[in-house]
Length: 363
Image (tube, rainbow, N blue to C red; front, side):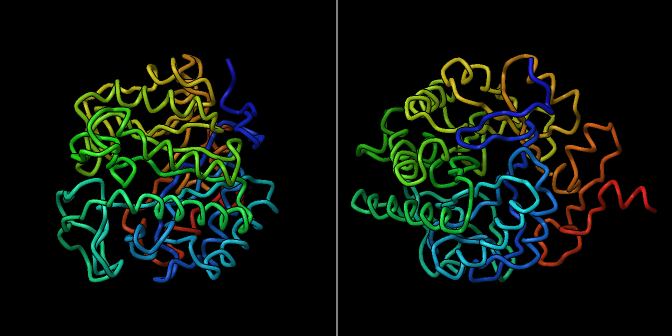
């Protein structure tokens, strides 16, 4: 079986190892969704990953409600991403951007209008805004006549991603955001061709992937799903049937890779007793499969590769705190621990100041 440190072909990308950097919201852009110089350094520091998947990046103002998160719908945003991709490439790395529409997970004070979703529902609890946490609001259902406009937004963001120098794109279909809201039956109560049966609920995901792939090519298109358990109030009564159907559709399209976020019963950032579905998905998806959630050691990650359940591992918070994570794992070196208080701040602290091994050794 392959080692965690062996190369892997992810569509058009020849990744030098199977240690991927998972997408993580970090809130270092401007309020207009424009990447900053801090982000250039942050991503360049982590270019040793087999592949970097960026933080969620908005396809439109409508879909981006997280304060200080970046976007890809304006020329200014595209130009500001170019130094990021350029720095990663100069360091020998590969980087794809995660395209994000948050659906009902946004607040009107951030986007300047009512949130949209599959149906008129609201997320439990509160949402981050520029004025602090506020209660989630009820979204309005996307009208079927608005779907073409939504697909156009994904197409524009994909074209902008390529213009900005990204090696490909990942569609955010997980974590209770818009595509997930269409997929799962406790958030989708539609009675048109996008609701009801599993095939209908998978329809939007398929159309988004096909539209993105028509621009980027299937070899530069991927998607993230979160098949097991509730996520931000979104859940399904029959996840195995739903997500194996979704995976079959993705296999037919021929995407570069599929990433799954799968928390366990002992998860440290979300947990569930719903079994992981990667073994069932592995049976119907023939492309590279990447798994994520609470992987912190070589032994833990290698066991998944040895079992044949997945082909690569996406590390999140562990990569956040260890810019040289592949080398640390290879050497069995101690790992830095992330400071959760700085995850969503706007400063360099807890972002670009985590020490690499050479600086630790020099001390």
